[in-house]
Length: 390
Image (cartoon, rainbow, N blue to C red; front, side):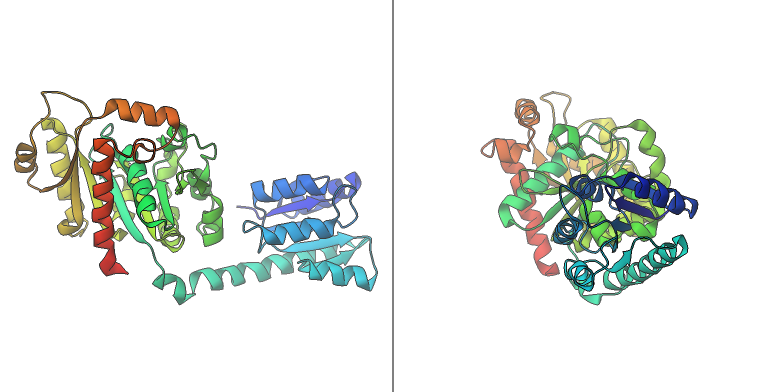
């Protein structure tokens, strides 16, 4: 993927000429004609480098650089100040506010290209060194919970959201909830979060682009306190599940960013799940008390153990979503499944409907509800199992 350069300049001729020249060199160009627009595009587009003019009417380049350096998204993005201001004091000010390089107009196109290539070359190894070879990050790895079901419609995503919120209310530690199946995203819509492109953006790029900073920028906060990496709801994005190396890079990064990481694998065992599932610290398999769902879940657990997953780390939650005589009793489910049931959730359709309207998990909007209390107990059990890992 081409490196992205943002040009911020109020001179239309500069935007056009410099942009065209850099496009011919193979770079992807984003342009902004004033400081405010430049900041917005920097935070949204997350460029690899910013070419910044100083003399702009609404907000000068010095102020733009200050704000870029204060924002975690752009804190380390190289800034090349490209301006007609030639005085030594101007250059000193530029470096003081965070510029990495300073060029005065006019300059030969070749000189501008050389400076840009040098800045990009210096920033890539530095990022790799600080994020990939820093052993301290490995010691701060978060506790990873993988949630999965044998087939769709068993409530995995809803349970994942409530467990994430429950863990946060108990600990107030950093908690990340990540949907992993593009095209099947539901949490963003249910919880009223507009940024639902995080997972797709990471899977569409290269593995080298999946850095701690990049992943953190793709997380969407929710008012309940958790952060979410959301999958899109567009079915066409399912094709991205083939990006297995990106999934591996993502799972390498996410645990560095929170004490708890809950992964919503959805249903089944696609290739990406088989590859990264063994890296979780524990697993929650969601089961429904019907014969077909139980048999399907039995096969899922067997397949998981074939991936060298310790069966002792697999915890089954019986989710009775609807009040029905067709639902089997706990002892019957355990017998047919061949695995113990760690927790049972009683049907509470009205509570979940209300939670969806409120765009928040049940454990937050109806904490005294019986099902909400049952989910809090599951969260407490996870906290107990996490203690030996600390």
